Amino acid sequence: MTHPITPPPELVAQWLEEASALRFLVREVHQYVATRAAQWAADQELDACCEWVSQWTPRWPDGARPEDKLRAARRPEPPSLKEINLKHLDAIERDGHYLPEILQDLRRAVEQLND
Image (cartoon, rainbow, N blue to C red):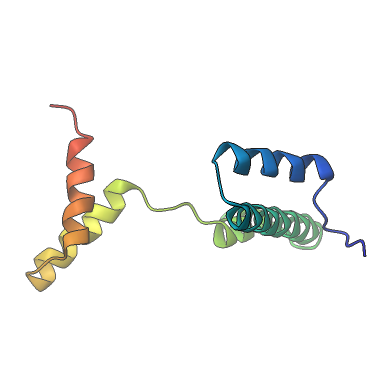
């Protein structure tokens, strides 16, 4: 059965090579390829939705294109190390306690600073 969103064989071969290079076990290879295929398909669908939205919706009052807003909402950038740690510090100030994970994140941020 052929579906309109089917990864090309070359891409599947690439994912298999990547999994092989990572020395995965067979079941891990299956999971890796399935995950990559799902991500690829979701990106294809998002691209199609953005293209469709761009035909029917004018720019927003702030000048932004609706397809850019859609893409930002569905594929947000992960928070930076600075943003993560500022939230941690806010929590420490507010609550007066911290978790070991917070200390690990703070240590990682401090270690990246220049002396």
